[in-house]
Length: 474
Picture: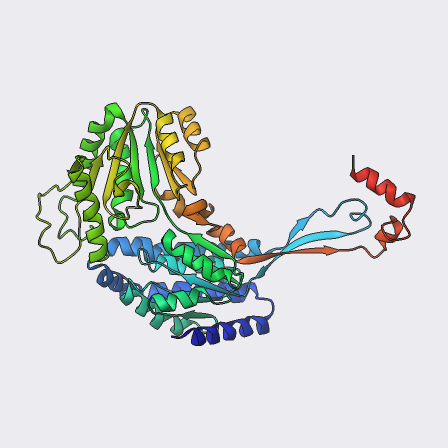
């Protein structure tokens, strides 16, 4: 599709939005219901498409994270939408503008047309979940799904028109050129989820039309394991989060700080955690493949570089399977112990089943290391020491935090989800998503009397005005 074709779709959506006027609760609720219906009706097609795109992707995981995981936010929006839509009363002021019946309120108005650029790692979830806030706020939407998951993108392009008029929701498929053109359209808001390197291009393209942008990116999300942590419970949680989707999660733990005397115990405990969840790997339906050959080679390159530079590499392969001959791009869970910071595995976001482990003597070493690096999307602390927990959380900055688990803060619909600095800009989910995709319109209603004249706020000025000024300067 050309830029001109996309612009035509956008103009049609904007014209329909303007003609509609106020968007009622009933219309918004119906649109959310239709989105839920698509997921319910086409769940198996979507799961099969994701499996095809990944070479192998856990069916159970796809049902959990992409189908049910998308319905939850849509239902949450339906449940709370009436309350979110109510105007918020505000206190009028300053004196004397707050006298004699003046009123102030905020009304949340739809923005108009919102663009969504969704990624390949959770291609259904990160397309449908934003619709909770976008449709809930009363907007129209244009979606550009990832070209790295073509089967899933094609299914979505086929199913959306069965439930939505293109003037409500339109799906635009295509490669990098289409994505670049899409980024430069004059949306009323643009949501991009993906790599920081691509986000710079998206932000630059959007700036030409002064389009406000929400960026959901990633980075190297650290884990700090305190001395008070139960190591086995800790590795069970870390490995569950890290190995879901084969580590291809923007919030996946990217490196772990462990007390130096507990590093060996952490490694042994991690191996037990993996063996319990994945007694086999190659033909295990629960263990997902890396998305493609390029990422497979990139991840193996990290491992080989670490090995060549003398780092200890621990491959967790419970059944001692041979990964050299396989129809997938599976990589066994791999720990890299105390890697040098010059290694690529410590510089790049890993996005795969590889996890560096660093020892520390004092927790402040971990805090200082985290603060020397770009602010991450997530941060995780394990331990029962509330003082230490408070120090880690108050002395670091991240998009969000989960304590004594990983990733789970993203599943809380009443918490905003977003990054900070290089890990993102803006946030959404739940009520915060409704606000992100709404315009908070300030409305002041003056009283029937001419307050400004009575208070001496209009020329000719005199003592009345000076009295008001002196009162405001106290």
